[in-house]
Amino acid sequence: MAKPLCIGVNALFLIPGGVGGTEVYLRNLLAAIAKQNRGHQFVIFRNNETGDDLTPNAPGFRTVATGIDATSRPRRILYEQTRFIGEAVAAGIDVMFNPGFTSPYRLPRPNVTIIHDLQHHRHPEFFKWSDLQAWRLLVWASARQSSQILTVSDASREDIHSVYGVPLSRLHTAEPGVEPEFFALPRDKEEPLILCVSTLHPHKNIERLVDAFAAFLPNHPEYTLVLAGMRGFHGEQVERRIAHHRLEQSVRVTGWIPRAEILSLYRRARFAVFPSTFEGFGMPVPEAMAAGLPLITSDLRPMKDIAGDTALLFPALDTAALTAAMERFANSPQDRAAFAQRARERARAYTWDRAASITLNALENAQ
Image (tube, rainbow, N blue to C red; front, side, top):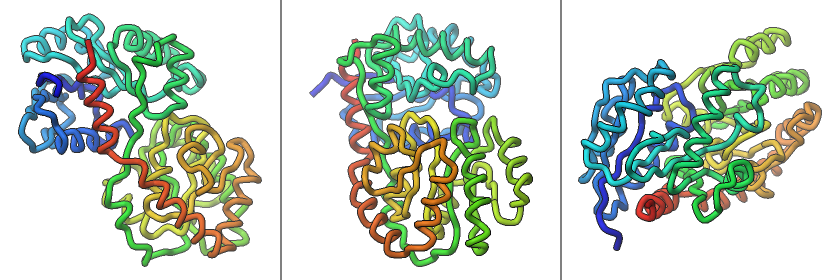
């Protein structure tokens, strides 16, 4: 057994309801680590926006409130690279776990960092100029300086290795899990509802989904489309596209909603669509699969790696193909049932316990 460590958790990036899937990842990962903790101590460094509920109510976990406001990203980054280093050393940490892309570069302790994806490298057009420069510098620094790097898919692992030259021996895939509540959902409240769980960012391809739904709706006027997730950088553009097609009565944009409401939508939806053009992982994909929901997703990695033959795949830039996939599921209860049954079984491979074990191994091997 590894020597017990004092592990810092750099949660300074977390803005509840404001960072999308990285929040879901961190909360579930910490809960799973608490269940299988190997005698380590964890110090959760939080910001002013995050409550103490982030810290598991379990032996070996404590919280340090840093007093930093994370809503000012420049101020948060400056703090992370300066004062935070002294506070972490004073707290007695042996290794720092950074689950939000960036890490304190000059920390005299090993860093273990999660780089979820390299969207800033693959799709710089989706970033403001100033944000892009910061992302390039900070993620490069994390890749260069971190003792161990975790990511969320083999596709991202290969990308980080290719772009930054990080040896594969330092790169580990800790795929997200699916909460047990998704597997337990009964399918007894189904209605003609198409569900897309996604932040409204440009790469999520939501405007194309709205276009496809506009072509689908005349033949299926009973259907509604629910866009459930953070408004993101592209919220206004999506709403303009909805208005362009006069779909205000048929498309609902929820904004960020609690997990209980997400579960209710998965229970009620007839099928789900995840049309993204780029992902590090794509957490709504295994969630829909686990919920027994027929799924349509773009044919890009990692989504097709996750779903395999349990989802209808379409070329991400082909609106007509997306409409045709929606037509197929709307017209064939048999297809929906067959895809959903296979998907639920495949989704059982994605567990938070596995992600926690891989993360603990990386923390124990940091040097």
